[in-house]
Amino acid sequence: MFKDPVLKKLYKKYGPHQFEDRSKRLLEELVESIISQQLSNKAADTIYNRFLALFGNKFPLTKQLLDIDIEKLRSAGMSYSKGQYIKNITKAFKEKELVIENIIKLSDEEVIKELTKIKGIGKWTAEMTLIFTLKREDVFSIGDAGLKRAIKKLYNLEKDSEILKLSQKWKPKRSHASWYLWRSLEND
Image 1 (tube, rainbow, N blue to C red):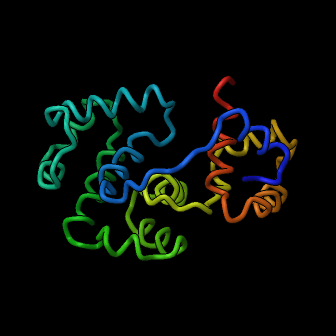
Image 2 (image 1 turned 90 degrees about the vertical axis):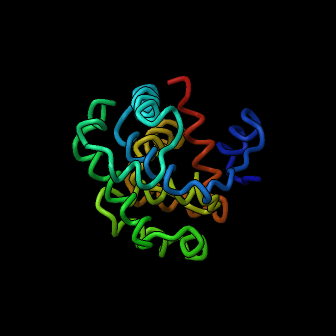
Image 3 (image 1 turned 60 degrees about the horizontal axis):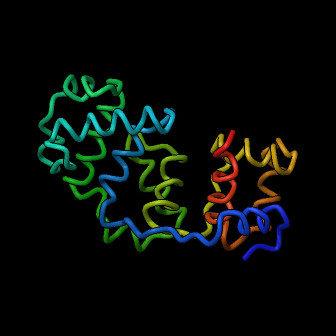
């Protein structure tokens, strides 16, 4: 799959990987991304489970998300701003600013442009959505701290320009390369 010797070794260690198309759950995936921003996986999972508990342990309907008081969202452990961002995203779906069927037809750059119009969704969240929700195979997020850590450890590169140059060698499978790089950090 990869010519790069480091990625070849990671591929051999972790085996083949495929991303799942979760585009039908775009709202849910974006809400979960907002909740998990800048948190450890464990903290994010705890808060997300508390969030679901507010709605009977299942992802809420759009109306329920719009109607819930932000203080209730805060009681699940999220900040006021994350609660507001979730409402912004939900409103964008309700008002048809974000329509799954339209989003999936857009190029990667167009998806990023559309998603980042909504307050609370930055470029990193949009890139993670491309990879993990829309199953786009050639996305590399230079803003991802984990990728930078893995590349520093495995390639001894730190400058963004050097990292971007390296990532060009992984086209058209940069999302997969990223997945293997993230996996390499699991024991750190």
